[in-house]
Length: 321
Ligand SMILES: Nc1ncnc2c1ncn2[C@@H]1O[C@H](COP(=O)(O)OP(=O)(O)OP(=O)(O)O)[C@@H](O)[C@H]1O
Ligand code: SF4
Ligand SMILES: [Mg+2]
Image (cartoon, rainbow, N blue to C red; front, side, top):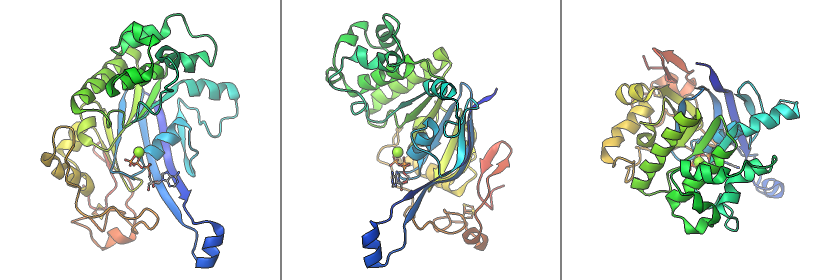
């Protein structure tokens, strides 16, 4: 199986300095926030790769760089061998862009309230030429809504139905890759499961690849082929769901899973993991997890652990074996 997405040493730094004059008066240095640091992973064609991490761990920033909405500060993303940042052939870029779609957390904010649902769904295709007759109606049925819904407006639907509309719109341009940023987080628990099941069915039917972003391990456990765990912009562990849940090798993953029995099946009412997440402007030296790690040794505060392959499970920890 070949890889559709290749993410290599991906890094994104934001300049979060105060305005120049304030800095001069207050004698402040420039403030740089490293949202994503040296992240590498591949996503196999027709598989689901889940990126999981606490709020602020860099999930959305990675998602935006993968779809080409945000340029990396360092490193590269290739989709089907095309790097959207460095590729010069406009035709190749255009083709690659239609292969990639994104679905966001808030389905209402991403639907134009003044447009009919049919027009919303067909817009990405229509902007490149005429959409095939009946495309929106066909897709609406495929996502579990009715063909007649094409004539309605977004406000006439529930949250779960609106997310189905967003999915239909993403499917319209026959993408290969869909980057889903917390697509079910805003939905009720029962609706969440339905939308996840739908996405799973559509993946098989359309031969899709998903990069699925979530703050909740239990949500991705059943849909993902591989899970990457992020901590403070760094990938700390990557494994299949079975391996990750049965033999988590990174102390941070172990801590997340130890918290899991205290939550319901969809990760609500979670007790936050112990300790504060450090400030990404001044991250801890060495292993970013060392101030919270129960087994840290001297080396951990001095040297950043490299990602190592341990029997198919990738782990960035000096002590994992
Ligand atoms: N445009 C920006 N300018 C400055 N800082 C940013 C910008 N976008 C993100 N950040 C910072 O980068 C870090 C990672 O943000 P990101 O939105 O990628 O996290 P996330 O994992 O998606 O979090 P959440 O679960 O809350 O959505 C955060 O510290 C955030 O404040
Ligand atoms: S490298 Fe050290 S501090 Fe980091 S997770 Fe491993 S043991 Fe803990
Ligand atoms: Mg986010």
